[in-house]
Length: 197
Image (cartoon, rainbow, N blue to C red; front, side, top):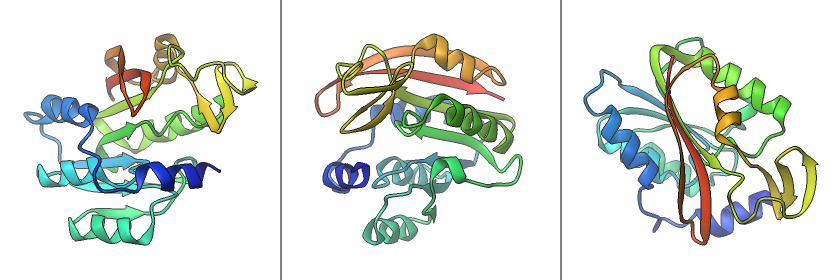
């Protein structure tokens, strides 16, 4: 079901670069960072944006189709077709880990495992940028409750609070955590985090 929804909504090439990616770029543009891991890159809109800005981008997604993979590779992006919870990179592999709406699909135990893994693969002094659905989102509470703030409605979503994000980022130094709203394509609410190792 999740794959069908993703292919219906996010495989088109007409999605502009996300505002989140622009905010991350503005923050990073004067920092000494080169390598970015884009977790759950989807059709690759943000991966391509970062690559065109001169970053060395590695992107991964479990649903990206062959056409999208070729598009990414033509831009010089290294692509892996993998599930986020199963990734294996050497410690300190990336200056930056970027996760735009890709870490809110897992139960709490799996989320802990993912965040611990991300801490390992970020270089000392590197950064992590995360955007997840928040408990203020209109979809919060809809469907079957699996565990606290985790529901199955069309597909599984784990809704974050600012406090939950702080807890998951406890191994990092938090730069900022904010709540945001936008149309995506309907009204949606998020928690965004900037943090440093």
